[in-house]
Image 1: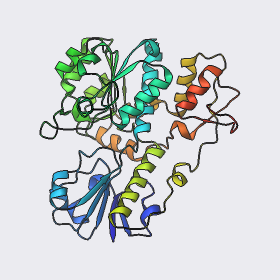
Image 2 (image 1 turned 90 degrees about the horizontal axis):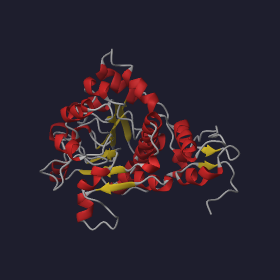
Image 3 (image 1 turned 30 degrees about the horizontal axis):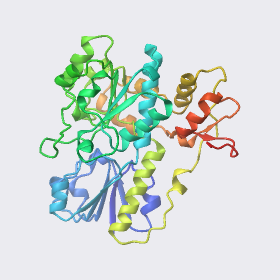
Length: 387
C-alpha cells in the first residue's frame, strides 16, 4: 500500500511507515501525476480534492487532518466509492485559546472589562462550544447562535441571530457551506446586512473560513468608525490574501489559529485511527503517548498582586500572544505576500496548548488558580486538586 501525504502533517512517517510506503510533498503541489499508484491520500485544507485530482488515480481513501471538509468534493468521493475521514474537533481547543488571547488583547488595548461585556458566538459546533465553555469558566457573558443546531433540538440555550445585536464582540466559528448544501448557508453570511444588524458590535473575530466574509462589507464597516475593530486569521484566496484588508485589521494572522502541536497531533492520530478502521488493521495506538511528549519545563509565573483578569491574561499570553503572529504577517507587506503567508504557515513555531503548561503555585493569585486550572493549565503540585 502507498500513501501520499502533505509534508506538513506531523508524525506521518512515524505512525504509518510500518503499514505502508510513505511519500510526502508540498500540499499545494499535490497533482494527478503524483497519484497514479497511490492508494491513500492524506491532506490539509490547502489541497482541493475533487474529480480533477483523483479521476485517474487508484486512491481508495482520503483523509484530511482538519476539522473542515469544504476542500473535499464529498459528492464526487461518495459517487466513486472513495472513503474519506476528517479530524473532527482536533484543533477546537487551539482555536478557542487563540480567540481568548485576542479577546484579552482587545480588552487591554481598549480598557474593557470582559465580564461587563457580551461575546456573541456564531456557530455552536466543536470550536464554538470549546470557546463557550472557557468563557463560562471565566465568568464572561456570552451566547451562541446556531439555527441548524437549534432546529435539530440541541438542548443548550441557543439564541437567534437577531439576539446577537446587543453583543459588543462577535466571533465566527462555522463551516463553509453554500445555499445548495445547507438551509443555513454560511458563504458570504458576514455581509453588509449583517454589519447593519449588529448594532452593538465593535469587535469582530473570524477564525472560520475566509469565504464567509464579503471583504468589501468588512472594509466598509471598519472604515465607518474608529471603534470598529477586527481580528482575522482566515482569508479569501489564500495565500494571495487581501493586503488592503490586512492593513485595516486590528490583528491579522496567517491561518494559524488551530496550529498547536496538540491540535496537529490529534489530527494525525485521528487519521491513523480512521485509516486502520478503513483497512481493518490492528490499532493499539495510545493517543496520550504522543500528546504529552516533550512538555515545557518552564512554569507559568504570575504576580500575587495581579487582579483576576490580569492573572488570566498574563497566563494566556505567556503561552500564546497573538500579537507575535500579527507582527510576523505584517512584516511581509513589503514582500511577496503570497510566499510570505505560506512560509509563515510552513515554518510555524511550536505552540502548545494551556494543558501542556504548569502554573507556579507560589506565584499564582488564589482567586485565579482554580479558574486557570479549569482552563486547562496543570498544577506543578501533584497534591493540588480542583475539589
